[in-house]
Image 1 (cartoon, protein in one colour):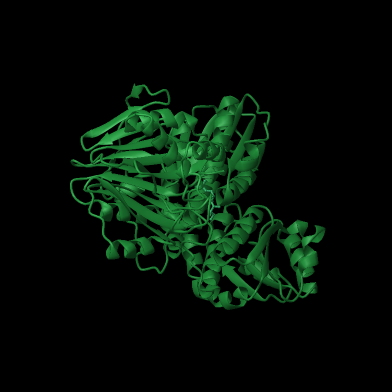
Image 2 (cartoon, rainbow, N blue to C red):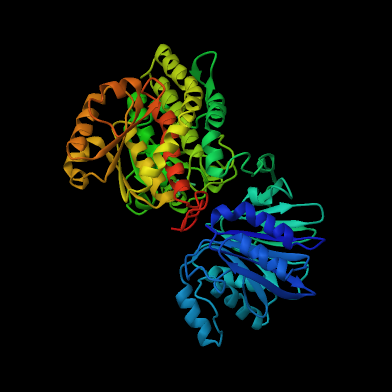
Length: 608
Ligand code: M6R
């Protein structure tokens, strides 16, 4: 959460900083700020709320410095006010921070005891003061940062600007991403490649514990012990992606509509379509036949993708799968089988809990396979093998296309494991591959249901609570549907396995309760019909997302039906995600909510 950027340029940098912050706003949008050196002296402009407020502030009161840092905030410590907005400053420096300083209270008390006066409620301000204290003791900026960093506990990416130092910027990273960008006579710092994409495609990612000294001429890297180190430069693809909404009102709409294309692209990367088999684009550093267990760990929507994959891997590869949310897994000291595989799923590849789980599993001798959307992310780099989703940048905070691309990759892996373990023969593999190949077309068909879905939004928007039900792979999709609705419309929603209804949630059903049932006509459809009857008998309004056959056999008075194209049920969750996402999207838009940047959320959750 939070995005940070730094530029040492040859012309005024405030415009470039704001441009980079726009590309980082997905990381948080509670406040924003910029600091530059004006004739050698620190000047800051900050504003609460979205970046446009900072832009207005900069129009009233421009900055002209040739070196500067910027920040877009997802508030952790202290309210999202202008006063708590970064950069935080002392008489010697300014700093921007992504992450959490866990020992900030002790440090703050210590520094107050030494006469420092704190102006904000943030944890970050201690970083400004602790480095300042070292400088007051006689150290130069580099030595002061090197002395202060080991005292900070927690997770951070930091960028420092020093009063009177027109050709010096320092960055540091521990547990939160930070990259150095190389321009033509300019140098950059940024939270990710996307931020720096308009300026450079050549980057170096700091490793955990690294800090870097930037001047206009280059970068000197140091490891945690302060030793100079060499870190490789990489070319990135990020600049190839345009960050705009096209003809859509919101990024979320664009990303939902892109799904047939990006799922098709992802599947083409993993399948040999003419041979009808899975063709993984990397060598597996383990033999699937020798695996004894798979553990899947992820957060939020990525977790639900993992939950769907559990059904596929168990069924096709006959491999037991354990799955947990990363925030629980990382602390529960799970015993892990010596021949185990951990699959971590993450769009951003930076989610703090998922990364910590990966590191725990690595220590336990697991093979680590990540399913990630950002190839240069920490999770991708720390995995033994990274299976990329080719969704392109996902800007809407609510995950849509990343989810269906994760499902596509996981489906291919499940089939590949099944084949390698002898649980599927070539014919069965071909059948499954043919079903996968059909998906982009089916998703395009599903998008055509949009007018009908939009029509349901006004009535759904009146609900205070909504229940989503599903069985089999539709159960995790029910969880995802509920998450989508609550995160962008703020309507309370819960997902349940349909069979669980009678074990408690049925008590909630009355005439005001919409119940969204996700069910293609599959092997368990008859069971789902019983659950729909239970709801209808209590006056609940059933909205069925199913196919024609399901509609015919539902045998109750449905409040509404979203009729999906007929398809084999195995991978239907991938196509059925489309109406689930559109329903949440249109309900939130009807309610006037900010669907791309819902309140309190951020796209990349790099804190615990
Ligand atoms: O970047 P990740 O996939 O690791 O992020 C995981 C979750 O934070 C993310 O899926 C979150 O739940 C989304 N807001 C859901 O739309």
